[in-house]
Length: 40
Image 1 (cartoon, rainbow, N blue to C red):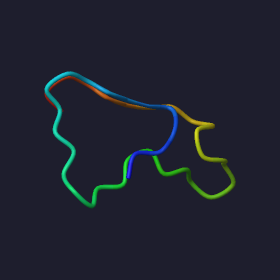
Image 2: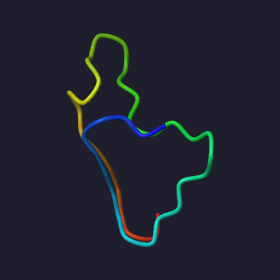
Image 3: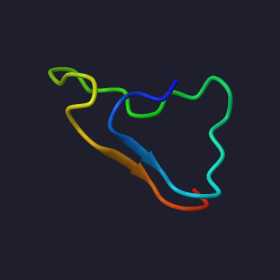
Image 4: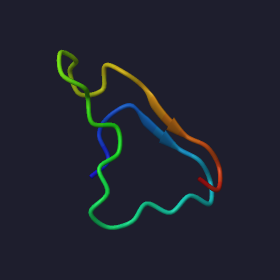
């Protein structure tokens, strides 16, 4: 699952079942940006 406000660089593979960009307690989905660089 890829949440809102997530940037995934070129060549990055996200495995099935991965959760990327889940908001921590006290924050709303998409409120904080998550960045994974190229080839990450």
